[in-house]
Amino acid sequence: FSLNFHGIVLRDGVGVTPQQLIAILNSPVANAWVDAQTRGRWINVATLGQLPIPLMDPPTAEILGSRVRELHDLRVRQLAHEIFVDDSELEPAASRLLVEIDEIVYDSYRLSKRERAEVETVMRAGKRPR
Image (tube, rainbow, N blue to C red; front, side, top):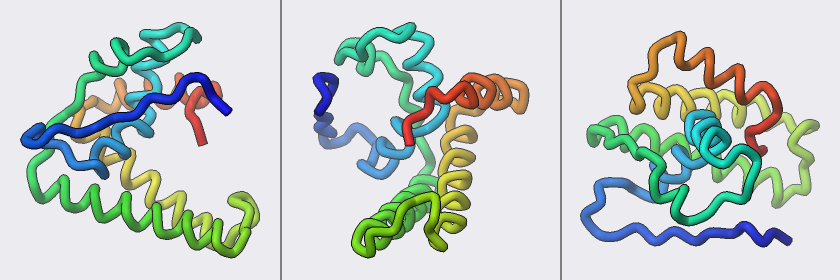
């Protein structure tokens, strides 16, 4: 049970799909940004509202949406068969999809290789949720 649950409702015309938002909020970029903003404190709605959300061109948004749906479907299959993530033969496919999703998000933020490395360094410290 968490006291830190936030619901998000996308407004019509915002230019972001649910899959894009899922990918962005679960990305190393957003997690590093939130960590820098909160410094270990609770995340609040005002902080989440300040998170920069990059807009994507339609082909990129479609590819990202497809990868997010594929990852979701793999996770559902794992749960349906009570397969533990670390023991699953599906895990290499899930890991590949997660890397691809993260790369699309990095590209949408237009991060340089150096900036990507800095984000990865922060996330290696175990701050990214699984």
